[in-house]
Amino acid sequence: MTYGGDDGRRRMPPRPPQPAARPRQHQRAQMMPLPGRGPSPYDSRTRPMGTPGHGPGEPPPPPPRQPPPGQSAPRPRRRRRWGVGKVLMTLLLVVVLFVGGIWAYLEFSINRVDALSDYSGRPAAASGANWLIVGSDSRAGLTSEQEENLATGGETDASGQRTDTIMVAHVPDNSTKPTLLSLPRDSRVKIPGHGTSKINAAFAIGGPALLAKTVEGATGLHIDHYAEIGFGGFANIVDAIGGVDMCIEKDMNDPKTGIKIKAGCQQLEGREALGFVRMRYSDATPRSDLDRVANQRKFIGALVSQIASPGTLLNPFDFFPLLSAAPDALTMDSGDHVHNLAGLALAMRGISDGGVVTTTVPLTSSSAEHWDKAKSQQLFDALKNDTEVPPDIIVS
Image (cartoon, rainbow, N blue to C red; front, side):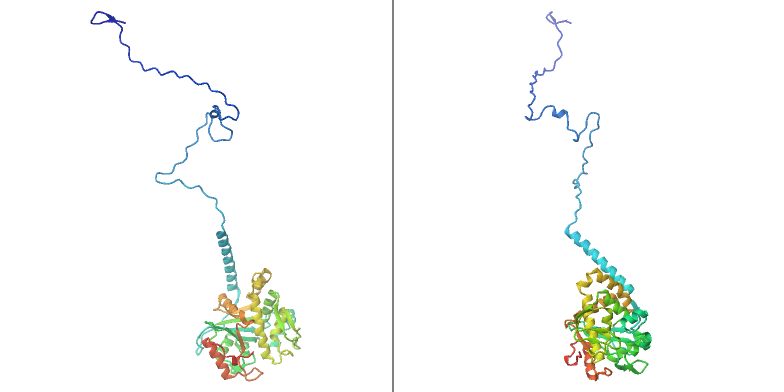
């Protein structure tokens, strides 16, 4: 197509502007790499089996989850590991639960009795705490075979329930040594409402309550706690821990009970232990009741020390039988608790090594019926005030 210009010449219509042609690039020839000489251009076309990715026709994987603006990415969860601290805390928790279970078991299993009560003229509470400890010679609950084995005699031989052992354990509030005081059962004292008689008759007449009231009246001491153990319970506890180690100075032969104990260091089982603390007709006990109460204090010291030893508490063959025998053997006042009993046991552990003052109430004669009033008052005043017991009034 042409058109005429002003000069009469024919001209071609102007062409529209064309984009500049790109310079032609020559593709370089690539040589196949030799094995082991670097990556191949075909590596990007294939992927090893089992590696993440997606093939043709597969949806691409979702993008990683991003945290909200202003928040850092969450840390990956770490696998919990049991460190030394956690193991120790777990063990401690198990021990606490175990001890708590035993504590509750004893608290609700030990026998209770209303032994202590307020009354007009009762001695006021003073320093420290006083326990009335009673060994009952009642045969109640024992079969005829047990009576024969323990050489206790029958119920008729005892003329009713009496106390074979009467002691006052004083636990001070200061650094003064604890005191374990024996009151001979033949001591003649005033029994409230029943005149003057042997002190153990109070238990036969009115049980623990009258005995506690009699002891308070005779000593002027306020009794805070009460503990009682009978013949059968005593022997069972000794047998439960496998016997008690004792050193006997002389051969002991009681013609009344038929119990014989040879001299020397040995392990006393329930039957022999009961005979040892009751014996007073042997040649080895010339002072009769005075020697008997002295032997009772020795044995209690050995018994408490052995019960509180790691060899007993950590030995399941001793500990669990003891735990089973204790509730039936013991009777406490209705206001007493296991922690009170534990405090008494801790205080009395020192009997064997001299950490506890052991004595009998001062007497006027070996018959153990009458107390020396002046010396007895000195002793009771020392206990009331938590002061040292004067050495010259201690009766071994």
